[in-house]
Amino acid sequence: MKTIKHTTLALIMALSIVAVGCATEPSGTSNSNTPASPSPSSSPSPPGSVSKATAIPVTLPVLDALFADEAFKSALKSKVELTDEQLAQLQRIAGEEVARLRESNAEGKSDEEQSRQAEESREHAAEAIRGVIGEQKAEDLFALARDYWVKGNEAAETGKTDKDAKTNTTEVPENSVLPGPNAVPKDTRVVVNIPAFRMDVFQEGALAKSYKIGIGYPEFPLPTGLRKAQTIIFNPTWTPPDEPWVAKMKNVSVGEKVEAGSKLNPLGPIKIPIGLPSLIHGGKSPAKLGTFASHGCVGLTTAQVQDFAKLLAQLAGSEISDAAIKSYFADKTKTRVVKLDRVVPVELRYETIVVEDGKLHIYRDVYDQDTNTEANLRAVLEVNGVKLEDLGDEERAQILDVLNAMSRHPLKETATTKTATNATSAASASPLAGANATVNKSEKRVAAARARKPIGKNQKEVVIELEALKGKGYPAAMNLDTGTGKPAATVALLKGR
Image (cartoon, rainbow, N blue to C red; front, top):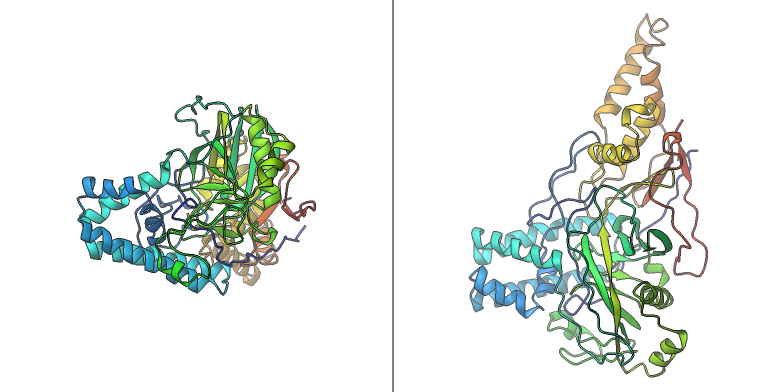
């Protein structure tokens, strides 16, 4: 009843490279928020308050990734009216920031340290950009960068197309992000829930398979919103960008293509573009799953990405046989681009409160989006026909306590904690304590809930079993591929009464 699964985020900066295809986008779904320009981070609202309209901001690493897109730089000149000198100065500052972050993360940091560094990065970005181009142009740049980051550049990948692949003509319907929190697809699509470190594949409304994934670092956050998969690239190459940190790498030179299959290539054997610069790609070790692992991409192991590529092709009506995959990998230096018969929507979500298979899952707010609030909790419960007031005093206290603990900046004492503690103390000290026992019973139950074993700083998930939610919610993981070849560990439950 009181046991909680404890896991630790292993934070070691991966060799994933932003400039040519591993980055991100924001856009809101459910307990996601609207993108905002860089600004100093403030503490999240305590449980019981409404979430602020904050979201994934434009950091210097994000800007550095966007500078790889010539169309973005051209838009900065025409729409924001930046000069070549201003562009060069911003590009230099962004590149230096990426180099600094790579060095500081090479030793590995805790999730708290990583988050703190991300906050500093956001503040530094706002100050640096405004210092170069001024307040108004900075705001225009933030807006343009967010637009590019959210939508992704859908320019086709270059490379030799598999001669047996058919031309892709089907488009994803517009505005097809599913409405409401914890929405269950009725169609065929891929759903990624970022704070859950999980990717689900739905076929005609049925959950076919789930994968444990690695997500983007806070400085390179994984996007939210709707993307689309329409190409699978086997044996992708990698071209190191013109960045200060590349000069420090052994056997790698700026602009010189790193061949597919090389140990120096961070993309693994397969990449699936979902709107540049974001990808779903392999090459990750099992230890990087369930952690920050990329520059805004969905990271999988080699075995996982091969399995996912086959399943994705099936969903798109473009069967790829084991024999075909074997032939593609026979020459790892040869890139093969397979166009899918149909586009498959990829919905990227940021949901830290999820009713799943009758249980309430509360995830760590890994990107500091202030989503673990009572307002979001109520929205999730009400979608499942339950109101917060329908729960018992202890259940409510327990859930609100978990929400606070799983926020990025938990309060040491919440308003409900203080009220319960004061009420219990006053009842015990009063000569009428016996007469007031019934009146103060609920406060004592709340205080008892608060006395439970505290939630660890690095704990990523808490699961609470509530009778009122039995049989409701988003489906539990199906055939979960953990990347280790072993079954997924079961998360211990906190049972509400």
